[in-house]
Length: 241
Image 1 (tube, helix red, strand yellow):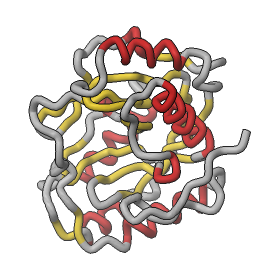
Image 2 (cartoon, helix red, strand yellow):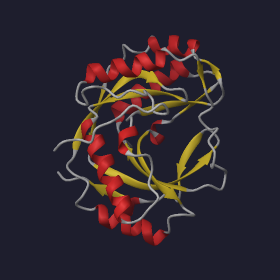
Image 3 (tube, helix red, strand yellow):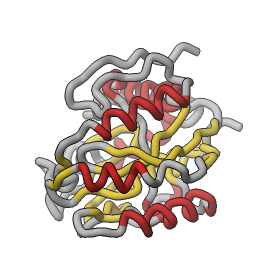
Image 4 (tube, one colour):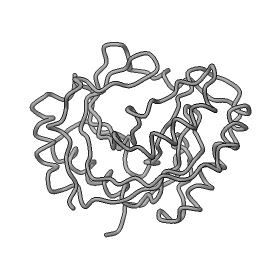
């Protein structure tokens, strides 16, 4: 199946997509080059529309329990522990696929209908690789490869949102898959972070088996996102074997 084409967008990171969505070396180089050219980071938490009362429904890929990913992430965290970064604990690691909408816009009945509609539409299980290490203006993150299965999944979810008249998130042409390990919590000079990250790129990559997609409601606590309510097991949707 052909994956949807990505396009340049100034607010995406990196703005230019890779030429080949399956070429790990090209994706990694593109992520690292974009991060290495930053002059300043921003506060990840400075986002219009988010308050302590905000609840937003998202599609995520989550990885608990994944011992190899947790072990590598803790090793990276030892080097990244510094003022200005909020470390993402292994239990909170995730790849954001797309937004469904704020809870004020999306009812519980619509969320249930979306979960039911997604059954059988989400495609087969697949494997990703998380590669240390790069970042964006607001986070330190693994590069993930390949992008093709993630683009197909994002496109399918976007189509479901359109069919059910849900707000949805950014279009697939702007999607740039990544797996964060730390959030920048203040504007700061990027060069010290770039230097630390560059020394962590010799860490081994981690293979991730993707067998399910989570439909979750998120709220924010200081320095982290939290699933709300915590038990959303009925909305962990299994991909085809």
